[in-house]
Image (tube, rainbow, N blue to C red; front, side, top):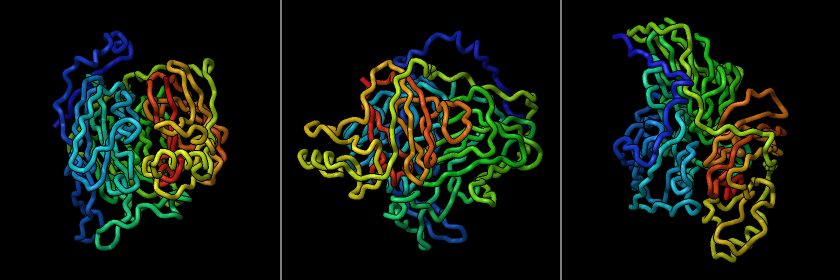
Length: 463
Ligand SMILES: [Cu+2]
């Protein structure tokens, strides 16, 4: 069967549309996300199943939503510990950001919480918990969230998802340790079973002659992959969901935990393989074979609609520096926690602390209900954050509630691109720029979850 025909959406055509009225859009039918234990066969050549935690029976769960229309999802917590859902990369109001204690009460076992928001940007996103993340995400509690630009469905002959996630599994199928002192204090604890879409290699199909959109999501807590596409010429057309100004070559693109890229390529007759070339021997992540269907797409690569993220001009920016270093909970923070009658639990941090942002940045005030922010930002002001990595390990740094432009690095040539998570290499300084246009207290943290949970986390206040 011939695939659907493409609807061409020009930039000019979209600009002419009236602004979307989010509050009145009907939106898709409400959904239920039931967080509970389910079982998945993950061990190759073994009947043993693994007691994963998931929001639905499918793993990975892939939700597709229209941009700008109200989305409603009720989280039902059927786990034995509290949880929330953070919608990673979505520029939505603080109350929907899903950070327990900071933006909402934890959703206790047996309780529910209704999330409702209109996603302002189209692209490839995901969602996951934000407390005891090392266990909850480690057990698989996450889903891919595809936000579609109205009218863009069918722009590509095939729209495919590759969700990378490794697992630490014992030979009987049970889980191994999610956090280790060695992993947390180094590059993270790596899974012993590597999967894409829950399989050793994702097996996908696309019609020859058609343009393919391959959405690659790194849902792993620790692993960095370096991408290369074999069998077709691949172009990165979106970074963390956001359309790029022009195509970027795939070869050598580093995808840290929580990062995403959309890759476009024209499907040939033969197979196309997405490889991880982190080590010397390429390891296949996904294999796309030609389907029986044919597509007669034109030579011109489909163009994504332009980003809705307001452009930030670094010339007008206030500058702030954030040093990522090894460190401990500051004595002031410990004193504050003691005075408040709280333990480290209240920050969702386990007892051990190896990392910090700006060293003593949690310090200072001791009588507030929340610890002090890393920085106070003026609503509407443009900022350049200089992120410096003073540790021997790379850190993918994620800022909530905003999408930033990665401007430059002291270590390598960067094609400026939009992102919500940026990988900062050892000794590297990276500059990111954005308009602080979303009021609230927004988390900023490393997405190597063991680093996040052992200190490399803070927040900025936008007011
Ligand atoms: Cu880190």
